[in-house]
Image 1 (cartoon, one colour):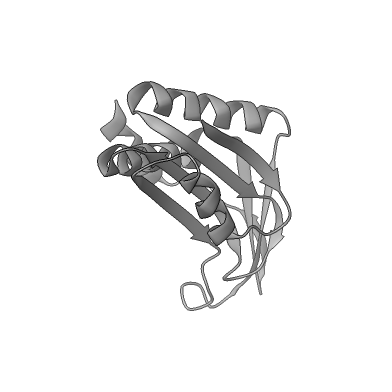
Image 2: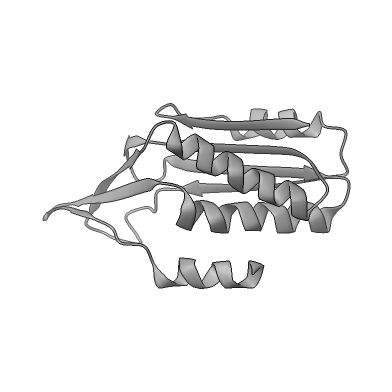
Length: 149
């Protein structure tokens, strides 16, 4: 089982993470990579700062992965989440799931990402030309969890 949870202020190499998941001897690898929205989405956005609760964050993400492993036959999972000040178009998160079959890889990756967005203790602050403000959780993220109940 290839498995890792990493919280870091450093960027990550998506291709390298994909290659690591392929080493699990699988038939499918599904990757989600999230980036800071560019200025076209929010022309005033200057940067985003992500904070977390060290130790607790890793434990919660590990619990999410364990639940995914109970639900689907995955042979590899990698979750990387960046913290600190990030600029538009920089990587934020990587979720990779590997399985013998594509459906398990797709569903487990989506499950992990949906739970990561709502259950992992991260806090997001958006910095704009007018100032900075903390971002509340979105109702659509909570709604996404309902499909896994």
